[in-house]
Image (tube, rainbow, N blue to C red):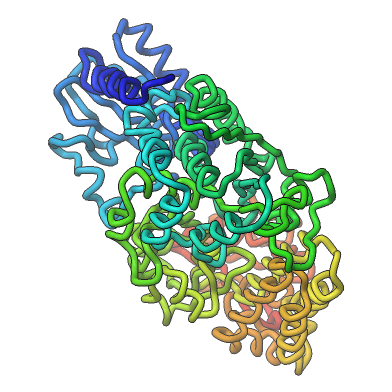
Length: 628
C-alpha cells in the first residue's frame, strides 16, 4: 500500500530543491486567461532565450494567480532572493527578463507587480501587501499560480491528500459533522448547507449512490470553477473522494462543458495520476473504500446547471428539468440517491478535512462561513479572480481590489449571481458579500460572478441582455418560462427601441411574477430577477425610455444620435477616417457635421474624437439641426 507520508516528505524535499535550489525557477501562468493574452508565446520565448544565453534554470507552467488584468504573468525565483511577479509580459519583455535578471542583477522593477516568498527588492512592493491582494484570503486558490497543476508531486508538497487520510480515519458521520461544524454552504447557487444535503442522501435507502461535481459554469462572465480546475485539479479530486466516502457513494461524475478544453485536459491527467497512486479505484489507502471518477462533457446548455437537467444529460437524455420532489438526494442519477455539488464546494471539503472546521470558520460571518472566489469583471480597472472572506463589502472588492471604475467614471451598479441574480445600485455599495445580505438586496450569490457597471450602462438594456440570454437558454419544457421570458424580452426590446408604452413597467412586473411562480426549474424562477431589480432601483430610467423616448445613459441606439459641437471641433479628421457610411462631411481644419439620415450610430466617431477635444456629443432624444 502507498505511504502518503513518505510521498509528501519526498515531494516537499523536491519542491524545496526546485524553489530554493542552485538555479532559478521561472513560473509562467498558462491557464486559459494567460493563453488568451499570449502566455504560450512568452513561454516559448523564455525557453529559446535561456537556451541561447546558456542560462541554467527550471521553467514550469502554473495556473491563474487571479491577476487577469495583468496577464501574461511570469514569476521568477532566484537563489537567495525573494520571488518577483511580473505582469503584461510579451516575448520581447521575456527576453529582457532573461538578459537583465536571470543573467544579471537588475530585477526590472518597471515590469514587476510585486515580490513574494519573504524579503524585499528595492523599487518593488510586496505582492500580498498590494491593494489588489492584501484584502484577499487565498484558501480555495492557495495553490493556483504557484504549483504545476500537471504534477501531482507539487500537490503532495502542499500537504495534498492529507485531508483524505484524515477522513478515512473517521466514520462517514464524523466527516459530515466536521463539514457541519465548518458551516460550509454550497458555493454554486443558493447556499444550501452542504452537510444537510449530504445527510439526506446518506440516509436515503439504497446501496448505490452517486456524487456529481457540477463544473458546467454557464453564467456569463464567470470563470471561478474553470480557473480552480486549471490551477489545482487535485484539490477537487480530493474533495470528491472525501465527499463520496461521507455519502457512501462509489462513483463520482464531473460534468464539465466541452468549451473548457484545458480544464478537461488537466482533469483527465489528474485522475490518471490519482489512480496510479492508489487514490482512486479499489480499496483506497487500504480503507476498504472504493471510488472512481468519470468525466461527462456537456454541450454548454445553461439549463444543465439545474440539478435534474444535469442528471438527464449524464443519462444521455436531452438536458431538461423534471418536477421535484423527489429530490436528487433521494432519487437522482439512474434513479439512485445523488448529490450534486459545485467545484468550489468540493475543493473546500478537502481544506476543511485537512485543517479542521475551526480553521475554516476563522473568516466569514455568523451565517456565511469561510471565503468565496469571485470573478470580478465589467467596468473595473483590475478585472480578475479574487478570493475574499464572506462579509467583505462590495465597495472594498470593487474599489480596493478592483481598483475602481475604468476611466474614473461613476460607479452605477453591480450584478451578482449572473442571469439568476440582480442588480445592486450605487447606494447599496456597502452591502456585504454574503448569502443573506445579497438576498436582502434582491440578488443572490450564485456561483460568484460579479459584473460592475458605470454611468454609461443603460439598466433597461442591461436587463434586456440578461433576459435575452435566459430566453435563448430556456429548454422550453414549461410554458411560463418558454413564453413568459419571450414576452418580457419583447417588451424590453420595444422600450429600448423607442416603442415603449405606458403600463409596460407594470406589465413586466405582472409577467415576471407569473414566470417566477409557474416555472419548473431555477432558470425560469430566477430569470426575471435582473428585470425586477432594475425596475426596483432604476425605475426612472424605464420611465425616461417610455415617456420621454430618451436613454439617460446614452447607449440605446434608437434613442440617441451623435452631433458635432462646432465650437469644439478642430477639424482633425479622425472621425472621418472611421466613418464607414460617409455620414461625416466637412473640410480639414474646419468643423465637421454628421448627416443624421446616413449615420449608422456605430459610435466610432465618438470613440475616436480626442478626449481633450470632445467635440462629438451623444445626444439622447430627437436629433436637431447640426451646429456648423
